[in-house]
Length: 570
Image 1 (tube, one colour):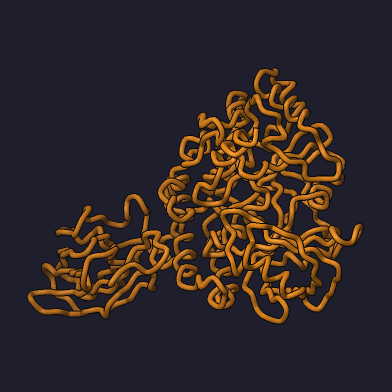
Image 2: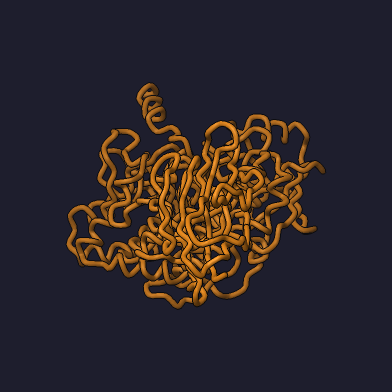
Protein backbone atom coordinates (compact mmCIF):
# COMPACT_ATOMS: atom_id res chain seq x y z
CA UNK A 1 0.00 0.00 0.00
CA UNK A 2 2.87 2.33 0.84
CA UNK A 3 4.37 1.82 -2.63
CA UNK A 4 1.01 2.58 -4.27
CA UNK A 5 0.67 5.80 -2.27
CA UNK A 6 4.21 6.80 -3.18
CA UNK A 7 3.51 6.29 -6.87
CA UNK A 8 0.34 8.37 -6.62
CA UNK A 9 2.20 11.16 -4.90
CA UNK A 10 4.95 11.10 -7.52
CA UNK A 11 2.30 11.30 -10.22
CA UNK A 12 0.91 14.47 -8.71
CA UNK A 13 4.02 16.51 -8.03
CA UNK A 14 4.66 20.08 -9.21
CA UNK A 15 4.10 21.15 -12.80
CA UNK A 16 6.55 24.00 -12.74
CA UNK A 17 4.30 26.59 -11.12
CA UNK A 18 2.40 26.01 -7.94
CA UNK A 19 2.45 22.51 -6.53
CA UNK A 20 -1.14 21.65 -7.40
CA UNK A 21 -3.93 21.11 -4.97
CA UNK A 22 -2.25 22.43 -1.86
CA UNK A 23 -4.64 24.88 -0.22
CA UNK A 24 -1.53 26.56 1.12
CA UNK A 25 0.31 26.48 -2.19
CA UNK A 26 -0.73 29.60 -3.92
CA UNK A 27 -1.05 33.17 -3.29
CA UNK A 28 -4.42 34.42 -2.60
CA UNK A 29 -6.56 37.44 -2.61
CA UNK A 30 -6.25 41.03 -1.62
CA UNK A 31 -7.89 44.44 -1.24
CA UNK A 32 -9.98 45.75 1.59
CA UNK A 33 -12.48 47.64 -0.55
CA UNK A 34 -15.62 45.61 -1.01
CA UNK A 35 -17.83 46.65 -3.93
CA UNK A 36 -21.56 47.06 -3.54
CA UNK A 37 -23.78 44.26 -4.76
CA UNK A 38 -24.73 45.79 -8.08
CA UNK A 39 -23.99 43.12 -10.68
CA UNK A 40 -26.23 40.40 -12.04
CA UNK A 41 -25.75 37.08 -10.31
CA UNK A 42 -23.56 38.62 -7.63
CA UNK A 43 -22.83 37.10 -4.26
CA UNK A 44 -23.93 38.92 -1.14
CA UNK A 45 -20.67 40.81 -0.73
CA UNK A 46 -20.02 41.87 2.86
CA UNK A 47 -20.24 45.62 3.20
CA UNK A 48 -20.14 46.25 6.94
CA UNK A 49 -16.78 47.45 8.28
CA UNK A 50 -14.95 44.88 10.33
CA UNK A 51 -11.64 44.92 12.20
CA UNK A 52 -9.91 42.93 9.48
CA UNK A 53 -10.38 45.62 6.85
CA UNK A 54 -7.18 47.42 7.83
CA UNK A 55 -5.16 44.18 7.72
CA UNK A 56 -6.04 43.73 4.05
CA UNK A 57 -5.81 47.37 3.03
CA UNK A 58 -4.01 47.30 -0.35
CA UNK A 59 -3.28 51.00 -0.16
CA UNK A 60 -0.61 50.68 2.51
CA UNK A 61 2.43 48.50 3.23
CA UNK A 62 2.15 47.34 6.84
CA UNK A 63 4.74 46.09 9.33
CA UNK A 64 4.66 42.62 10.92
CA UNK A 65 7.18 41.53 13.54
CA UNK A 66 7.61 37.95 14.77
CA UNK A 67 9.66 37.04 17.80
CA UNK A 68 10.63 33.43 18.47
CA UNK A 69 13.45 31.19 19.58
CA UNK A 70 16.38 31.52 17.17
CA UNK A 71 16.47 27.75 16.61
CA UNK A 72 12.79 27.79 15.71
CA UNK A 73 13.28 30.40 13.03
CA UNK A 74 16.33 28.53 11.74
CA UNK A 75 14.15 25.45 11.30
CA UNK A 76 11.35 27.34 9.52
CA UNK A 77 13.69 29.36 7.35
CA UNK A 78 16.28 26.69 6.61
CA UNK A 79 13.97 23.70 6.14
CA UNK A 80 10.57 25.11 5.14
CA UNK A 81 9.59 21.81 3.49
CA UNK A 82 9.31 20.20 6.94
CA UNK A 83 6.46 22.61 7.82
CA UNK A 84 7.04 22.30 11.56
CA UNK A 85 4.97 24.51 13.87
CA UNK A 86 6.82 26.80 16.29
CA UNK A 87 5.59 29.24 18.96
CA UNK A 88 6.07 32.97 18.48
CA UNK A 89 4.78 36.35 19.45
CA UNK A 90 3.19 38.47 16.74
CA UNK A 91 3.05 42.23 16.29
CA UNK A 92 1.20 44.19 13.60
CA UNK A 93 1.54 47.94 13.50
CA UNK A 94 2.22 47.86 17.25
CA UNK A 95 -0.62 45.45 18.15
CA UNK A 96 0.86 42.41 19.93
CA UNK A 97 -0.41 38.84 20.35
CA UNK A 98 1.43 36.09 22.24
CA UNK A 99 1.04 32.36 21.86
CA UNK A 100 0.92 32.34 18.06
CA UNK A 101 1.94 29.24 16.07
CA UNK A 102 4.04 29.73 12.92
CA UNK A 103 5.14 27.37 10.17
CA UNK A 104 6.13 27.51 6.52
CA UNK A 105 3.45 26.80 3.93
CA UNK A 106 3.29 26.16 0.23
CA UNK A 107 4.97 23.70 -2.09
CA UNK A 108 6.39 24.91 -5.40
CA UNK A 109 6.62 28.36 -3.84
CA UNK A 110 8.80 27.30 -0.91
CA UNK A 111 12.12 29.13 -0.70
CA UNK A 112 14.72 28.63 2.02
CA UNK A 113 15.58 31.95 3.62
CA UNK A 114 12.23 33.48 2.77
CA UNK A 115 9.49 30.86 3.13
CA UNK A 116 5.82 31.69 2.93
CA UNK A 117 4.43 31.70 6.48
CA UNK A 118 1.21 30.47 8.01
CA UNK A 119 0.23 32.03 11.34
CA UNK A 120 -2.33 30.40 13.62
CA UNK A 121 -3.70 32.43 16.51
CA UNK A 122 -5.69 29.58 18.07
CA UNK A 123 -3.51 26.49 17.56
CA UNK A 124 -1.52 26.98 20.76
CA UNK A 125 -4.11 29.12 22.51
CA UNK A 126 -7.57 27.60 21.91
CA UNK A 127 -10.21 30.21 21.27
CA UNK A 128 -7.73 33.00 20.63
CA UNK A 129 -8.20 35.19 17.59
CA UNK A 130 -6.80 38.49 16.38
CA UNK A 131 -9.13 41.07 14.86
CA UNK A 132 -11.55 38.23 14.25
CA UNK A 133 -8.99 36.09 12.39
CA UNK A 134 -7.98 32.58 13.41
CA UNK A 135 -5.17 32.47 10.86
CA UNK A 136 -3.14 34.70 8.59
CA UNK A 137 -0.92 33.79 5.64
CA UNK A 138 2.15 35.62 4.40
CA UNK A 139 2.99 34.69 0.82
CA UNK A 140 6.60 35.15 -0.28
CA UNK A 141 5.47 35.72 -3.91
CA UNK A 142 8.38 33.65 -5.19
CA UNK A 143 6.24 32.61 -8.17
CA UNK A 144 5.03 36.11 -8.99
CA UNK A 145 7.92 38.51 -9.41
CA UNK A 146 5.44 41.35 -9.80
CA UNK A 147 3.71 40.73 -6.44
CA UNK A 148 0.62 41.87 -8.39
CA UNK A 149 -1.39 38.86 -9.60
CA UNK A 150 -3.33 38.37 -6.37
CA UNK A 151 -4.11 42.05 -6.11
CA UNK A 152 -5.46 42.25 -9.64
CA UNK A 153 -7.10 38.82 -9.78
CA UNK A 154 -9.08 39.12 -6.58
CA UNK A 155 -10.05 42.74 -7.23
CA UNK A 156 -11.54 41.65 -10.55
CA UNK A 157 -13.44 38.77 -8.93
CA UNK A 158 -14.97 41.01 -6.30
CA UNK A 159 -15.73 43.60 -8.96
CA UNK A 160 -17.79 40.89 -10.63
CA UNK A 161 -19.68 40.31 -7.37
CA UNK A 162 -17.88 37.00 -6.74
CA UNK A 163 -16.20 35.69 -3.59
CA UNK A 164 -12.49 36.27 -3.33
CA UNK A 165 -10.34 36.43 -0.24
CA UNK A 166 -8.52 39.66 0.51
CA UNK A 167 -4.83 40.51 0.45
CA UNK A 168 -2.57 43.30 1.52
CA UNK A 169 1.18 43.78 1.76
CA UNK A 170 3.64 43.80 4.65
CA UNK A 171 7.29 44.11 5.49
CA UNK A 172 8.13 41.25 7.85
CA UNK A 173 10.87 41.07 10.47
CA UNK A 174 11.84 38.13 12.68
CA UNK A 175 13.75 38.72 15.90
CA UNK A 176 14.51 42.25 14.83
CA UNK A 177 15.92 41.38 11.40
CA UNK A 178 14.07 42.06 8.16
CA UNK A 179 13.21 38.86 6.28
CA UNK A 180 11.31 40.27 3.32
CA UNK A 181 8.28 41.76 1.68
CA UNK A 182 5.15 39.56 1.66
CA UNK A 183 1.64 39.43 0.28
CA UNK A 184 -0.72 39.26 3.27
CA UNK A 185 -3.44 36.71 2.55
CA UNK A 186 -6.86 36.06 4.05
CA UNK A 187 -7.30 32.31 4.61
CA UNK A 188 -10.42 30.58 3.31
CA UNK A 189 -11.75 29.08 6.53
CA UNK A 190 -14.69 29.30 8.96
CA UNK A 191 -14.23 33.03 9.37
CA UNK A 192 -14.14 33.58 5.62
CA UNK A 193 -17.32 31.65 4.78
CA UNK A 194 -19.17 33.22 7.70
CA UNK A 195 -18.19 36.64 6.43
CA UNK A 196 -19.45 35.85 2.92
CA UNK A 197 -22.45 33.64 3.59
CA UNK A 198 -23.51 34.54 7.11
CA UNK A 199 -22.83 31.08 8.54
CA UNK A 200 -20.05 28.53 8.79
CA UNK A 201 -22.07 25.37 9.40
CA UNK A 202 -21.65 24.01 5.86
CA UNK A 203 -18.87 21.71 4.73
CA UNK A 204 -15.86 23.47 3.22
CA UNK A 205 -13.40 21.44 1.15
CA UNK A 206 -10.09 22.27 -0.46
CA UNK A 207 -8.28 20.05 -2.91
CA UNK A 208 -5.84 17.76 -1.15
CA UNK A 209 -2.13 18.41 -1.31
CA UNK A 210 -0.54 17.42 -4.63
CA UNK A 211 -3.85 16.29 -6.16
CA UNK A 212 -5.37 18.07 -9.14
CA UNK A 213 -7.25 17.22 -12.31
CA UNK A 214 -10.40 15.64 -10.85
CA UNK A 215 -12.62 18.62 -10.11
CA UNK A 216 -16.14 17.23 -9.88
CA UNK A 217 -15.70 14.34 -12.27
CA UNK A 218 -16.49 10.75 -11.17
CA UNK A 219 -13.72 8.76 -9.49
CA UNK A 220 -13.33 5.31 -8.01
CA UNK A 221 -11.26 6.81 -5.18
CA UNK A 222 -12.70 8.05 -1.94
CA UNK A 223 -13.30 11.77 -2.23
CA UNK A 224 -11.05 12.34 0.77
CA UNK A 225 -8.15 11.20 -1.40
CA UNK A 226 -8.76 14.33 -3.44
CA UNK A 227 -10.39 16.72 -0.97
CA UNK A 228 -9.66 17.85 2.55
CA UNK A 229 -12.24 19.27 5.01
CA UNK A 230 -11.29 22.79 6.06
CA UNK A 231 -13.73 23.76 8.84
CA UNK A 232 -14.77 22.46 12.22
CA UNK A 233 -17.88 20.89 10.68
CA UNK A 234 -15.67 18.35 8.95
CA UNK A 235 -17.10 16.25 6.14
CA UNK A 236 -16.58 12.65 5.05
CA UNK A 237 -16.70 13.34 1.31
CA UNK A 238 -19.99 11.53 0.70
CA UNK A 239 -21.70 14.83 -0.02
CA UNK A 240 -19.21 15.40 -2.82
CA UNK A 241 -19.90 11.92 -4.20
CA UNK A 242 -23.61 12.81 -4.27
CA UNK A 243 -22.82 16.13 -5.98
CA UNK A 244 -20.72 14.42 -8.65
CA UNK A 245 -23.56 12.01 -9.37
CA UNK A 246 -26.04 14.87 -9.84
CA UNK A 247 -23.64 16.67 -12.18
CA UNK A 248 -23.03 13.52 -14.19
CA UNK A 249 -26.57 12.17 -14.54
CA UNK A 250 -29.07 14.38 -12.71
CA UNK A 251 -31.71 16.42 -14.51
CA UNK A 252 -31.51 20.17 -14.85
CA UNK A 253 -33.76 20.84 -11.86
CA UNK A 254 -31.74 18.48 -9.67
CA UNK A 255 -28.52 20.17 -10.75
CA UNK A 256 -29.84 23.66 -10.03
CA UNK A 257 -31.00 22.48 -6.61
CA UNK A 258 -27.61 20.96 -5.78
CA UNK A 259 -25.27 23.80 -6.76
CA UNK A 260 -25.29 27.43 -7.75
CA UNK A 261 -24.71 26.83 -11.45
CA UNK A 262 -24.56 30.50 -12.42
CA UNK A 263 -22.02 31.21 -9.68
CA UNK A 264 -19.80 28.33 -10.82
CA UNK A 265 -20.03 29.57 -14.39
CA UNK A 266 -19.28 33.19 -13.49
CA UNK A 267 -16.23 32.25 -11.44
CA UNK A 268 -14.86 30.04 -14.22
CA UNK A 269 -15.54 32.48 -17.06
CA UNK A 270 -14.10 35.45 -15.19
CA UNK A 271 -10.91 33.55 -14.44
CA UNK A 272 -10.72 32.40 -18.06
CA UNK A 273 -11.01 35.99 -19.26
CA UNK A 274 -7.91 36.65 -17.15
CA UNK A 275 -6.13 33.79 -18.92
CA UNK A 276 -6.21 31.26 -16.09
CA UNK A 277 -4.30 28.03 -16.69
CA UNK A 278 -4.56 26.62 -13.18
CA UNK A 279 -8.13 26.79 -11.86
CA UNK A 280 -11.27 24.68 -11.54
CA UNK A 281 -12.23 24.91 -15.20
CA UNK A 282 -8.69 24.83 -16.54
CA UNK A 283 -7.13 21.87 -14.76
CA UNK A 284 -9.21 21.13 -11.65
CA UNK A 285 -6.97 22.99 -9.23
CA UNK A 286 -6.89 26.04 -6.93
CA UNK A 287 -10.42 26.24 -5.58
CA UNK A 288 -12.57 25.49 -2.55
CA UNK A 289 -16.09 24.09 -2.46
CA UNK A 290 -18.59 25.27 0.14
CA UNK A 291 -22.02 23.86 0.92
CA UNK A 292 -24.12 26.97 1.43
CA UNK A 293 -27.18 25.34 3.03
CA UNK A 294 -27.57 22.80 0.26
CA UNK A 295 -26.31 24.94 -2.64
CA UNK A 296 -22.64 24.35 -3.39
CA UNK A 297 -20.45 27.37 -4.19
CA UNK A 298 -17.12 27.55 -6.02
CA UNK A 299 -14.54 29.68 -4.17
CA UNK A 300 -11.54 30.73 -6.30
CA UNK A 301 -8.03 30.61 -4.88
CA UNK A 302 -4.48 31.31 -6.05
CA UNK A 303 -4.12 33.68 -9.00
CA UNK A 304 -0.45 33.09 -9.74
CA UNK A 305 -0.92 31.20 -13.02
CA UNK A 306 -3.07 33.68 -14.89
CA UNK A 307 -2.77 37.21 -16.24
CA UNK A 308 0.00 36.13 -18.60
CA UNK A 309 1.91 33.89 -16.24
CA UNK A 310 5.60 33.90 -17.24
CA UNK A 311 6.61 31.08 -19.61
CA UNK A 312 2.93 30.57 -20.54
CA UNK A 313 2.19 34.06 -21.78
CA UNK A 314 1.17 32.96 -25.28
CA UNK A 315 -1.05 30.18 -23.92
CA UNK A 316 -2.83 32.53 -21.54
CA UNK A 317 -3.62 34.91 -24.40
CA UNK A 318 -5.75 32.30 -26.16
CA UNK A 319 -7.60 30.69 -23.24
CA UNK A 320 -11.12 29.89 -24.45
CA UNK A 321 -13.74 30.72 -21.80
CA UNK A 322 -16.03 28.06 -23.30
CA UNK A 323 -13.45 25.31 -22.82
CA UNK A 324 -10.49 26.58 -20.79
CA UNK A 325 -9.16 23.05 -20.21
CA UNK A 326 -8.30 22.89 -23.93
CA UNK A 327 -5.44 25.36 -23.43
CA UNK A 328 -4.15 24.54 -19.94
CA UNK A 329 -0.76 22.77 -20.11
CA UNK A 330 -1.69 20.88 -16.92
CA UNK A 331 -5.17 19.74 -17.91
CA UNK A 332 -5.01 16.09 -16.87
CA UNK A 333 -5.91 13.87 -13.95
CA UNK A 334 -2.63 13.68 -12.05
CA UNK A 335 -3.20 10.01 -11.11
CA UNK A 336 -4.64 8.50 -14.28
CA UNK A 337 -3.38 10.97 -16.86
CA UNK A 338 -6.88 11.21 -18.34
CA UNK A 339 -7.74 14.53 -19.98
CA UNK A 340 -9.56 16.95 -17.72
CA UNK A 341 -12.80 18.71 -18.58
CA UNK A 342 -15.03 20.77 -16.32
CA UNK A 343 -18.40 18.97 -16.19
CA UNK A 344 -20.12 21.91 -14.47
CA UNK A 345 -19.21 24.43 -17.17
CA UNK A 346 -20.25 21.92 -19.83
CA UNK A 347 -23.65 21.58 -18.17
CA UNK A 348 -23.96 25.37 -17.93
CA UNK A 349 -23.30 25.73 -21.65
CA UNK A 350 -25.73 22.91 -22.48
CA UNK A 351 -28.41 24.62 -20.40
CA UNK A 352 -27.95 27.90 -22.23
CA UNK A 353 -26.28 30.08 -19.59
CA UNK A 354 -24.95 33.23 -21.20
CA UNK A 355 -21.17 33.08 -21.01
CA UNK A 356 -20.75 36.01 -23.38
CA UNK A 357 -22.73 38.25 -21.04
CA UNK A 358 -20.19 37.51 -18.28
CA UNK A 359 -17.29 38.30 -20.62
CA UNK A 360 -18.93 41.56 -21.65
CA UNK A 361 -19.64 42.49 -18.04
CA UNK A 362 -15.99 41.91 -17.11
CA UNK A 363 -14.70 43.94 -20.06
CA UNK A 364 -17.06 46.79 -19.25
CA UNK A 365 -16.48 46.57 -15.49
CA UNK A 366 -13.43 45.60 -13.43
CA UNK A 367 -11.44 44.64 -16.55
CA UNK A 368 -12.14 47.84 -18.43
CA UNK A 369 -8.70 48.93 -19.62
CA UNK A 370 -8.82 52.35 -17.95
CA UNK A 371 -9.72 50.70 -14.63
CA UNK A 372 -7.38 47.72 -14.58
CA UNK A 373 -4.35 49.50 -16.05
CA UNK A 374 -4.65 52.18 -13.37
CA UNK A 375 -4.91 49.46 -10.72
CA UNK A 376 -1.68 47.86 -11.94
CA UNK A 377 0.23 51.13 -12.12
CA UNK A 378 -0.91 52.42 -8.72
CA UNK A 379 -0.18 49.09 -7.04
CA UNK A 380 3.25 48.86 -8.66
CA UNK A 381 4.11 52.38 -7.54
CA UNK A 382 3.13 51.55 -3.96
CA UNK A 383 5.23 48.39 -3.64
CA UNK A 384 8.20 49.19 -5.91
CA UNK A 385 10.61 50.17 -3.14
CA UNK A 386 9.95 47.19 -0.82
CA UNK A 387 10.14 44.77 -3.76
CA UNK A 388 13.55 46.14 -4.75
CA UNK A 389 14.69 45.76 -1.12
CA UNK A 390 13.29 42.23 -0.78
CA UNK A 391 15.33 39.12 0.02
CA UNK A 392 14.43 37.51 -3.34
CA UNK A 393 16.18 40.23 -5.33
CA UNK A 394 13.29 40.50 -7.79
CA UNK A 395 13.66 44.22 -8.49
CA UNK A 396 14.56 43.98 -12.20
CA UNK A 397 12.09 41.13 -12.72
CA UNK A 398 9.40 43.17 -10.97
CA UNK A 399 9.85 46.02 -13.45
CA UNK A 400 9.57 43.60 -16.35
CA UNK A 401 6.60 41.79 -14.87
CA UNK A 402 4.49 44.89 -14.25
CA UNK A 403 5.16 45.98 -17.85
CA UNK A 404 4.36 42.48 -19.12
CA UNK A 405 1.14 42.45 -17.11
CA UNK A 406 -0.01 45.62 -18.85
CA UNK A 407 1.03 44.14 -22.19
CA UNK A 408 -0.97 41.00 -21.48
CA UNK A 409 -4.04 42.87 -20.33
CA UNK A 410 -4.09 45.21 -23.31
CA UNK A 411 -3.61 42.37 -25.78
CA UNK A 412 -6.08 39.99 -24.14
CA UNK A 413 -8.81 42.55 -23.57
CA UNK A 414 -8.50 43.96 -27.09
CA UNK A 415 -8.76 40.46 -28.55
CA UNK A 416 -11.86 39.62 -26.52
CA UNK A 417 -13.48 42.98 -27.30
CA UNK A 418 -12.61 42.70 -30.98
CA UNK A 419 -11.27 46.25 -30.99
CA UNK A 420 -8.68 48.54 -29.45
CA UNK A 421 -9.56 48.95 -25.77
CA UNK A 422 -7.48 52.05 -25.16
CA UNK A 423 -8.61 55.46 -26.34
CA UNK A 424 -6.76 56.63 -29.43
CA UNK A 425 -7.32 60.31 -30.22
CA UNK A 426 -7.77 61.45 -33.77
CA UNK A 427 -4.92 63.30 -35.44
CA UNK A 428 -5.13 67.08 -35.54
CA UNK A 429 -6.51 68.57 -38.73
CA UNK A 430 -3.92 68.49 -41.50
CA UNK A 431 -1.58 66.06 -39.69
CA UNK A 432 -0.71 62.72 -41.32
CA UNK A 433 0.13 59.52 -39.49
CA UNK A 434 2.21 56.48 -40.47
CA UNK A 435 -0.46 54.68 -42.48
CA UNK A 436 -0.87 57.73 -44.74
CA UNK A 437 2.83 58.02 -45.55
CA UNK A 438 3.09 54.90 -47.79
CA UNK A 439 5.55 53.02 -45.55
CA UNK A 440 7.60 50.26 -47.16
CA UNK A 441 10.90 48.57 -46.51
CA UNK A 442 12.85 45.62 -45.18
CA UNK A 443 12.83 44.28 -41.63
CA UNK A 444 15.05 41.86 -39.72
CA UNK A 445 12.31 39.25 -39.45
CA UNK A 446 8.57 39.10 -39.74
CA UNK A 447 6.99 41.87 -41.71
CA UNK A 448 6.48 45.60 -41.55
CA UNK A 449 3.26 46.24 -39.61
CA UNK A 450 1.42 49.56 -39.59
CA UNK A 451 -0.60 50.83 -36.62
CA UNK A 452 -0.43 47.55 -34.75
CA UNK A 453 1.73 44.56 -34.00
CA UNK A 454 -0.65 41.84 -35.10
CA UNK A 455 -0.28 39.24 -32.39
CA UNK A 456 0.44 41.82 -29.70
CA UNK A 457 -1.83 44.56 -30.97
CA UNK A 458 -3.71 46.55 -31.79
CA UNK A 459 -1.31 49.32 -30.97
CA UNK A 460 2.00 49.02 -29.21
CA UNK A 461 2.88 48.55 -25.54
CA UNK A 462 6.35 49.77 -24.58
CA UNK A 463 7.38 49.48 -20.94
CA UNK A 464 3.76 49.23 -19.90
CA UNK A 465 2.71 52.36 -21.79
CA UNK A 466 0.30 52.06 -24.71
CA UNK A 467 0.87 53.82 -28.03
CA UNK A 468 -1.87 53.81 -30.65
CA UNK A 469 -0.10 54.40 -33.96
CA UNK A 470 3.21 53.75 -35.60
CA UNK A 471 5.27 51.04 -37.31
CA UNK A 472 6.59 47.70 -36.13
CA UNK A 473 9.87 47.01 -37.90
CA UNK A 474 12.14 44.46 -36.27
CA UNK A 475 15.81 45.53 -36.43
CA UNK A 476 17.78 45.64 -38.55
CA UNK A 477 15.31 47.54 -40.69
CA UNK A 478 15.01 50.40 -43.14
CA UNK A 479 11.54 51.86 -43.67
CA UNK A 480 10.86 54.46 -46.36
CA UNK A 481 8.15 57.09 -45.90
CA UNK A 482 6.87 59.50 -48.54
CA UNK A 483 6.60 63.16 -47.52
CA UNK A 484 3.94 64.92 -49.64
CA UNK A 485 4.32 68.45 -50.94
CA UNK A 486 3.33 71.00 -48.33
CA UNK A 487 4.53 68.93 -45.39
CA UNK A 488 7.79 69.38 -43.51
CA UNK A 489 7.59 68.67 -39.77
CA UNK A 490 8.04 65.10 -38.42
CA UNK A 491 7.75 64.03 -34.82
CA UNK A 492 7.35 60.68 -33.04
CA UNK A 493 9.07 58.25 -30.72
CA UNK A 494 10.99 54.99 -30.69
CA UNK A 495 11.03 52.01 -28.36
CA UNK A 496 11.30 48.25 -27.98
CA UNK A 497 7.96 46.44 -27.93
CA UNK A 498 7.62 44.36 -24.77
CA UNK A 499 8.05 40.64 -25.37
CA UNK A 500 7.30 39.03 -22.00
CA UNK A 501 10.86 38.68 -20.80
CA UNK A 502 11.62 38.11 -17.14
CA UNK A 503 14.70 40.34 -17.31
CA UNK A 504 16.12 42.84 -19.76
CA UNK A 505 17.43 40.55 -22.49
CA UNK A 506 18.88 42.84 -25.12
CA UNK A 507 21.83 44.92 -26.12
CA UNK A 508 19.30 47.44 -27.35
CA UNK A 509 18.88 49.21 -30.65
CA UNK A 510 19.83 52.53 -32.23
CA UNK A 511 17.35 54.50 -34.33
CA UNK A 512 17.94 57.24 -36.88
CA UNK A 513 15.96 59.37 -39.34
CA UNK A 514 17.69 59.99 -42.66
CA UNK A 515 16.89 61.91 -45.83
CA UNK A 516 18.97 62.38 -48.99
CA UNK A 517 22.01 60.83 -47.31
CA UNK A 518 21.81 63.16 -44.30
CA UNK A 519 21.10 61.95 -40.76
CA UNK A 520 18.49 64.23 -39.21
CA UNK A 521 18.36 62.50 -35.83
CA UNK A 522 20.01 59.57 -34.06
CA UNK A 523 18.96 58.06 -30.75
CA UNK A 524 21.13 56.95 -27.92
CA UNK A 525 20.99 53.19 -27.26
CA UNK A 526 17.36 52.28 -26.59
CA UNK A 527 16.89 49.18 -24.41
CA UNK A 528 14.06 46.88 -23.50
CA UNK A 529 11.70 47.90 -20.69
CA UNK A 530 12.64 51.54 -21.21
CA UNK A 531 10.09 54.26 -21.88
CA UNK A 532 9.69 55.29 -25.49
CA UNK A 533 12.17 57.99 -26.55
CA UNK A 534 10.55 60.98 -28.31
CA UNK A 535 12.11 62.83 -31.21
CA UNK A 536 11.29 65.94 -33.24
CA UNK A 537 9.89 67.98 -34.59
CA UNK A 538 12.40 67.43 -37.40
CA UNK A 539 12.39 69.57 -40.53
CA UNK A 540 11.98 67.33 -43.58
CA UNK A 541 11.50 67.94 -47.31
CA UNK A 542 8.93 66.49 -49.71
CA UNK A 543 10.08 63.16 -51.10
CA UNK A 544 11.36 59.99 -49.49
CA UNK A 545 12.94 59.68 -46.04
CA UNK A 546 14.20 56.62 -44.17
CA UNK A 547 13.59 55.34 -40.68
CA UNK A 548 16.55 53.13 -39.79
CA UNK A 549 16.77 50.75 -36.81
CA UNK A 550 19.91 48.75 -36.09
CA UNK A 551 20.93 46.23 -33.46
CA UNK A 552 23.41 47.47 -30.92
CA UNK A 553 25.84 44.57 -30.93
CA UNK A 554 24.59 41.01 -31.21
CA UNK A 555 20.98 40.17 -32.01
CA UNK A 556 18.73 39.55 -29.04
CA UNK A 557 15.15 40.75 -28.63
CA UNK A 558 15.34 44.11 -30.35
CA UNK A 559 11.65 44.31 -31.24
CA UNK A 560 11.83 47.84 -32.58
CA UNK A 561 8.88 50.13 -33.10
CA UNK A 562 8.45 53.66 -34.43
CA UNK A 563 5.68 55.20 -32.38
CA UNK A 564 3.14 58.01 -32.66
CA UNK A 565 4.56 59.24 -35.98
CA UNK A 566 2.96 62.51 -37.13
CA UNK A 567 3.82 64.62 -40.16
CA UNK A 568 2.61 68.17 -40.11
CA UNK A 569 2.61 71.03 -42.62
CA UNK A 570 5.82 72.92 -43.01
